[in-house]
Image 1: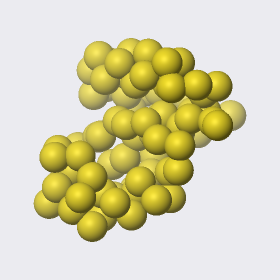
Image 2 (image 1 turned 45 degrees about the horizontal axis):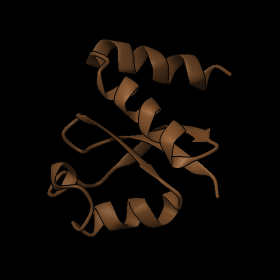
Image 3 (image 1 turned 90 degrees about the horizontal axis):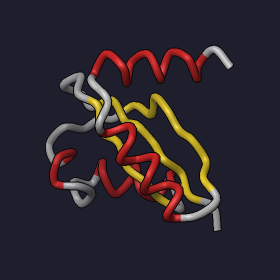
Image 4 (image 1 turned 120 degrees about the horizontal axis):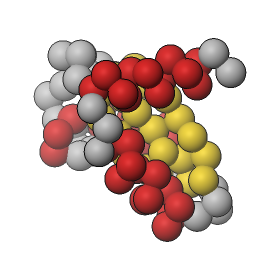
Length: 84
């Protein structure tokens, strides 16, 4: 099973980082208002970044690393991966 670390841009311009094994389903859950508490009421969302990980432990570590970045650093990460 592969895990995805993702960043969503919310309608208010904020960024949300999470992990999942089914990104399409998880985004639909967020849009339905049943995802993370933070995303509730911040739809619609735009997927701006995703990374694939081998397992949950790796994905969780990467999620923590990304969440610890400043907004500017997250935007730089998004821009760097979009150029690949």
